[in-house]
Image (tube, rainbow, N blue to C red; front, top):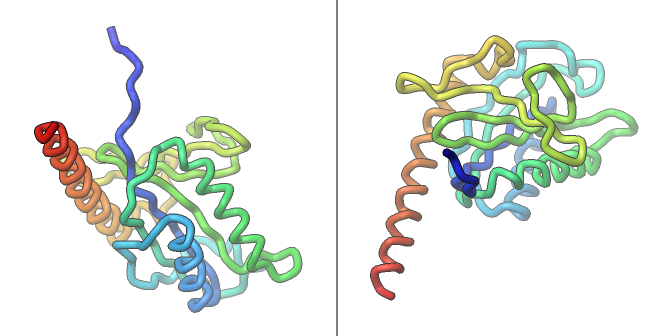
Length: 186
């Protein structure tokens, strides 16, 4: 029989895209003020898998992925997504967004993104936010699923999230070692 237990903390990641490269850097600074410093950041990428956002945000669009040093509780994903909405609104031009911010969490097993849109594979969390299982870790790498957005299935992006996962596992093992050391001292 299973019994309820608290999950391990996870690594916060953001996908940020905009037609204004300098705005992406400003948004990273904004999130560092909320969640502490970042540790891994992708190279600037052309966001060209869809033209869905072109009318609202312009073209071309550029994207960066960023992860943060401090681990968070998985349940904090809802608050992070709501904060992302606030930051998007802060930089709006009239009714149009200038930046899109998609937060997610990386654990040993998966990448989960937060979204405000329901769909068959998404699980409601709270306050209008759903969890979107985007990538799963199997056979030594993250793998896409039938509903994974094509840009998240990209080889470079998979490599980025593999690096984030490796860093996460290292940080988690160091935290466990520190906890064991403090228990031994008592």
